[in-house]
Amino acid sequence: MVLYCGKKEPVFDKNFVHSVYIWLNNPDNPEERQLFEKSLIKFLNTSKYAKTNFVGTPAGTDREVVDNTYTYSIIVTFSSKEEQDLYQKEEAHLLFIKEASSLWNKVQIYDTIVLD
Image (cartoon, rainbow, N blue to C red; front, side, top):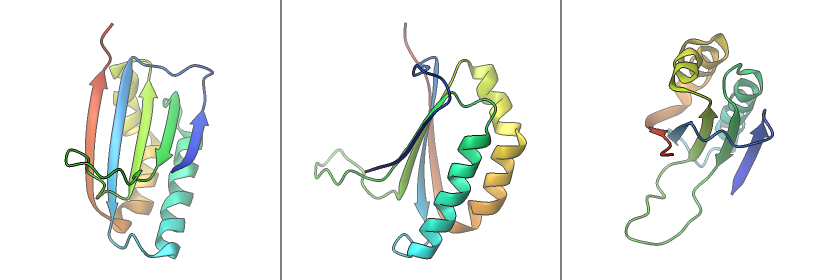
């Protein structure tokens, strides 16, 4: 289920894709989910560098090769690796980590430079 799709630019920027998977400590706790989502959406709306972002939850596809154990997936695109590097240090990103990191127990990230 897609929970949020924020587009800061009219077109998906496919140069650098930052895929984040987060496992909450208490994924069945609605109050903690609400706190996490509020902090995440605030962060994504204030990021200077993220071009497009998608937030969702596992689709529940039942196949051996699919991992549905995470709580949230976050896909953020950037125009370059350099902009992604700036994003890692920006105040909005650091504030999100400070506000929400106590709610998760695992984060897995896959960064991709898209082939031409």
